[in-house]
Image (cartoon, rainbow, N blue to C red; front, side):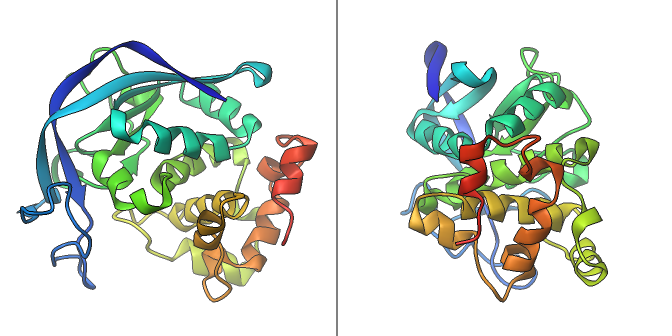
Length: 263
């Protein structure tokens, strides 16, 4: 696994979103902002945020030469390059090749994701639109991750949101699906609201995210991905995912399959 810079670093003002606290997420985020001495601001549609001036950004190329993996990543904060690399290092090579095929533009970091009343300063998106303000990147052929999403989980040193969005790509072609879940688990997960998107696949993509984290050798990341009391994180869900094509020998190497064994 290697990362190379594309061109030279550049500077730009960015917006870092914050996840609101409380049942309705209408209270200030319960974690500190990028500028801890300044309060979070709030936009009624896009949510909580702070403007960070003159942030250093870089475009990157992530590759695994022996596994035919090559992904372009744009507008990453230089201080968070390692987070992105560590996140992609968790993803099996077969999954990244599927990502390349389905999302050839790669990954772009941005102030917000979504349009009009669905636009937010947090989260990520597999959009169906191309943003004309980024002529170098076709969003409809890629993934958007907000700066707020990666800031929220900086203590893990990875981006769970990026894994979740890759999970959406893994639903293409049934690489992961509810087919291998019990009827009860399928109904529960498909009706679980885990994000601003009420879609039935959101909890499935969360389950994928947690299973990827469960495979990590980092104890904190593994703990984040495992919790017996939560269906998306428990052994029952992991067993169902292991029967999906994404976690069989069709898409995993023998060493990768070992990483996803029960512990």
